[in-house]
Length: 381
Image 1 (cartoon, one colour):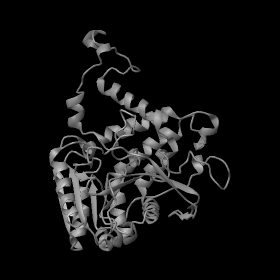
Image 2 (cartoon, helix red, strand yellow; image 1 turned 135 degrees about the vertical axis):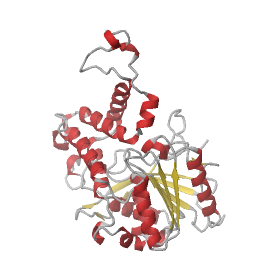
Image 3 (cartoon, rainbow, N blue to C red; image 1 turned 45 degrees about the vertical axis):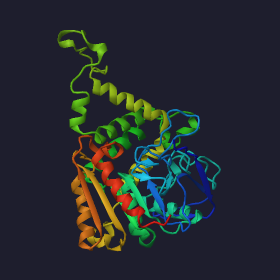
Image 4 (tube, rainbow, N blue to C red; image 1 turned 90 degrees about the vertical axis):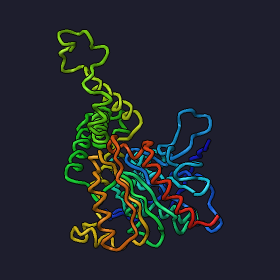
């Protein structure tokens, strides 16, 4: 069993942000798994998606249900084998899982940041991660890997620090968000900011949490993570047991009660999310998703934007992922091939939608395992 130990590192020097603001006296929470080899060539950085954290793999001592969010992928004998690689998981700035974010005190004012926490971007996160690697004495990464928003960070690493990355593994991701994706994010944000308990983002000092908004935001997001096939197979049009025998056709004929199983499931997911996630963090991270677009400064020419990359790539997509559809991964593949980069691409026929990147599809795991086996041959013991 892989045991995980949370760590934290403080940075006094200000981090310049893309917005023109800066962040000083900040901390990054992280975990490491495996052993860094003598020439420090076997390090792999894992970048997390929207509601994940630095707790990527393993379990915490004495806690039964504490598996890392990618524990099926990372560990001894797993596709990313910690007997061969030194794996680092970092919690991004602005998150609510330990790294400096809206819930922390602003050193310039002595008050909790709240809505005053500066806007952060994928590029800002990558720069912060690079500082952490500097402090750990790691100059070059064997690989950087992430799914969804984490995949955007992996891609950005290859562009911002091309000489520090040998491989980039980009899973279920995209070169930017479509208008539809931005629209989903905006509806979720509006649910939060219009909650009476939001107080303009300064709800901490009022002793409340905008749980209603968070619940709706999570319900909206969760719908986009699943495929229609999975929802139909898992829930279909099934009624909750409590509604059976409720009247003609077994319906309650209520506009307020959750009658269908899918309604009950989404409410459960929303309730759970609202208990542990921070509303300001949700706003920050979804906005970082919206902003990411490396081709923007090149007139929308992705091939020109990716010319900076020099590492090798593995891209993986899933056929039923309609939020980050395979055609978006193929855009990245084409742009890299236009630049004659070394690219491997796998399009997995899986029914699970966007969430497939977190699940145990044997073909998916096999592709990642084979790719890291090839990287391991480049690394000294």
